[in-house]
Image 1 (cartoon, one colour):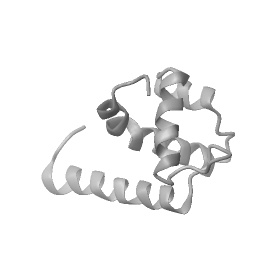
Image 2 (image 1 turned 30 degrees about the vertical axis):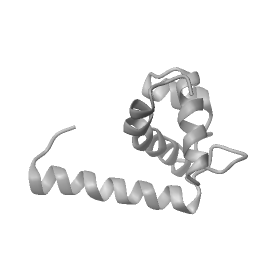
Image 3 (image 1 turned 45 degrees about the vertical axis):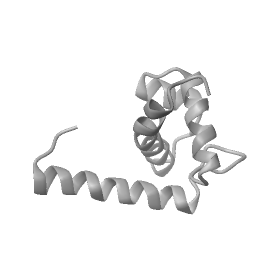
Length: 91
C-alpha cells in the first residue's frame, strides 16, 4: 500500500460511512463521488478499499458494503454517539 496503514485504519470508518450514506440516499457510489465528498485522492481510497475488501467489509466487485460492513458502520455510529453524549468527546 502506498499510504501509511495507521492513516488508512483511522479514516476507514469515515470512508465506509460515506459509502453507506451515498448508497442509502439512492446515489451512485463511485470512487470519484467518495473522493469529492471527503476531499481525499482516489489513490488513497483504492488503498482503503483494498483493506476493507480483505476484511470483508466491502464487496469484491463493487463499492457496496457487505453485511459485515454495514454492521461495522452501525457499531461505529453507536460508539460515536456514546462518546459524544456520555463522555462529551469531540472528533
